Image (cartoon, rainbow, N blue to C red):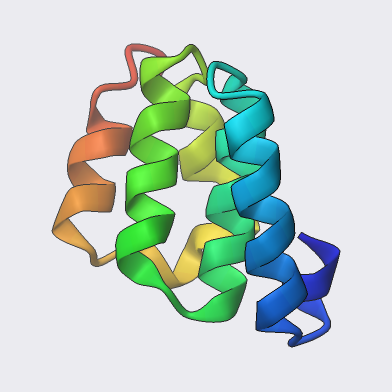
Length: 88
């Protein structure tokens, strides 16, 4: 995530891929991957990661309320994902 925030896509992607291979069932890892992909400007991977994070147990409200995803508010996939939240 920090490499992505620093604008260093190569080490960011290398670390993400390695981490996801080691912990394929960790919802927080997918959530953080979503932040990193968003930082890198990869909307498809961001949404894929967020959907997986929610599927594995991250509440949609967490995704909805995270400022890093402000740029996705008008994205149809994002809207569907956060609309599944029962706490709204």
